[in-house]
Image 1: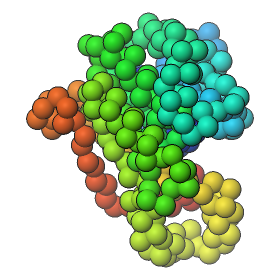
Image 2 (image 1 turned 135 degrees about the vertical axis):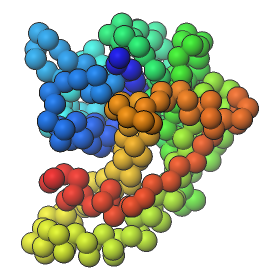
Image 3 (image 1 turned 180 degrees about the vertical axis):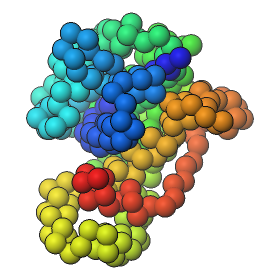
Length: 299
């Protein structure tokens, strides 16, 4: 029986993570040689009229930049206008702008899009929200969305992938945004997967030499220049790829049949001792293949 996950990408960081995640999800299922099955229906909906796959996702940002890039990319066909909520001015790295001002304008629109996504589900398992808590849209509007989902859909599991700002974050308001957002995550989310931006940076630095060495041995030196050009254009791809693989691995047990086939809801049952203590840490190994962009995009 299909078990669906509705993803909600909020802010620049959330949509960049989602961009990499959907690319990985497509490649993962394509490698199995199956057009559409129950495992694939967890993240995707098949449009019979257009004969296209559609992501079970809502893309939200108060700036148009990243969303427009996604729509113009190879993944653009996964999304349509009914899945987008965007503005042009941005939240100005201000939690209050996102939580109060933009939520006033877009709360009903977001809830309507959530409702339409739920109508296409047979057995919805959870909402999976991707966001950063250092900026304005991700922290403010993102935490407000968690609050709204808790009020409207209290019986559906709410899982957030929350990127915490690094100590050298160039946004001066990020510590305040993070603290204000955390209050809502503590009270309204069922489970939070904290992602430390500083740790991601250190991981990339620590394995860079090993990754380049392995890449050179497997693919040869001719592709090194291409990889460097991609890194210059998209400096956060490696960091987002780690998060994407983490989410893919986390949901494998509910998407594919096997001895460990369990609902994602079981995470809270087994790992959360008290309702407010629902922040869980994760680990991933090996790391070289999730950092190597040539491995991800060319294989």
